[in-house]
Image (cartoon, rainbow, N blue to C red; front, side):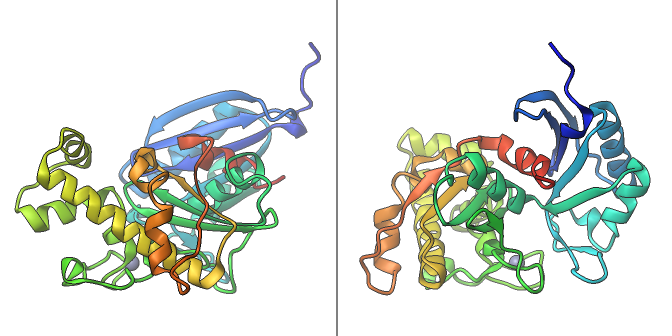
Length: 299
Ligand SMILES: [Zn+2]
């Protein structure tokens, strides 16, 4: 077999809360390298870990996905739930550590790009993406292009307010972004755990709450129902603004049928007409979408 020209190699890196993933695509979009390391808690060790991963991945273009966004003029990283990165010039520091040009993008946008290209959003015009994991990320791709917005803040669905609040949602939960009542504080793994503790007084981890619900335990079932209803409201709110052709759900919690297959009829009543039919699909590439999209930032 003829060796691949190195210029066609594309390296993707996805910085997560607990792990950093790296892959390399060859020119046929085949993954020829994969590695995962634990995310260091502090900023400088994280930069070093990424540089080491890229060097191990070898030659090729470098795309990096991370929670948060770069300020469009100053480049200062902000709004990341990986708080050590906030206030840092992450792209500049990574270029210095890696020694070649890179592209850095919000991780949910990378996810969206991947799913729009060859995943569950392929063939649709307006695609709204959610990553429902520790937090709630959003992405918007129109005709194959990431919509970043004038302030690089488009599709921050997790930091729109939870709409049509009820007594069960009250008082609004304080968010790490400084506001209160953000969608992410309710619909995310963290949100599920906080909600369960608020209502029952007992602290349980998300997977345990879900296991209990599957066993028919009342408190777990109720927590899952609240999660589902809140997510339906958030989707309806987005539908009322952009009415996407499809919603694509990724992240750990997107494995739940409550947040994918069962969602469309729950969205409808909250839409303006009360009858809108939302298309909801599960991400095709699962947890790999973020890193696949990062590798495609130079496509
Ligand atoms: Zn917020």
